[in-house]
Length: 218
Image (cartoon, rainbow, N blue to C red; front, top):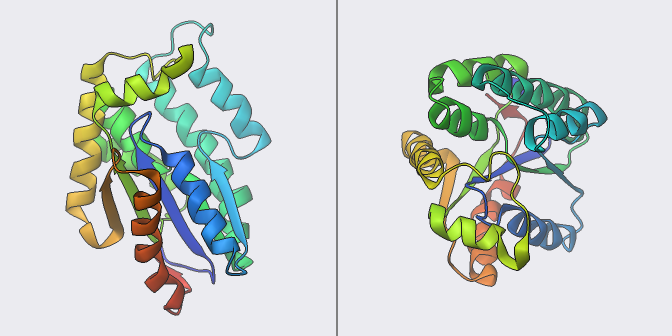
């Protein structure tokens, strides 16, 4: 499906502890300083119903959630997010920065939960009516490093973060495979680089997109 929007859509992907929210904030600040209207959002979440679904699927204490149910909860949250938040912002000409998008489901549920990457991708493309990012920034993090980062200061891990390193290793492999399949749509960076260096590399990749005539995205 092809849509026509004047905005720019950028997704930040990577394993838990990769620094996605930090880099989204850095890019938002840089773009806003240039007078651009920027919307930062996240998944799962981004809408009232999405935040409720986020709690159900990530918080401990809701009992067993099987892999298929987990995948469908994420897809439902994403459907609302795309329809209620992302598309309207793009139609207003804004730059949308999302912390996670479809690739996360493909990696976590498709590969991590072994549901099949194609099956999970198809469900999510249907849920979002085919809305795709103009650029995906993939911050590649070693699972052990990611765990050290997200547990620093005795921080509690959510239901997915607390999965074994083997689970997170499968996710990392899936993310890298997605980027290798469509390199023109991805910027892959090692998450261990200093925050400032990562921010500069990302801005350098985004600047040409700002100069291009926008409006058509598959």
